[in-house]
Image 1 (cartoon, rainbow, N blue to C red):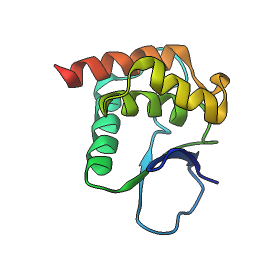
Image 2: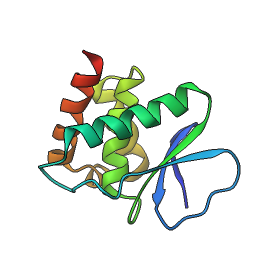
Image 3: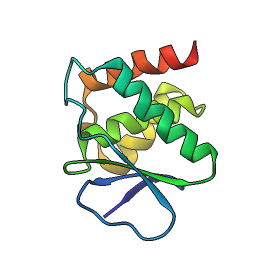
Length: 117
């Protein structure tokens, strides 16, 4: 089941099948913790934001659709203009702050900063 964080960005387990024009971004190759490759993080964030800016609905998918997908969604929303506090608030209100891995989020924020420069 897709959890829609905002109208066009959601998270789900990778074994889900989706109906309609939904662009799926697989984030199962990310680590729930420190040590994520910044290049891979940048690629997933750019892939997601590009699809969203093109008017597509995007679903970030990890094994259970909980931690990696929701944590990366914060970075995607920040690249689209939300503040850190706003993006964390969206995820926390929809799925709980326990679905955010701080170490992965720190890696993702570094990738966001690289994208913005």
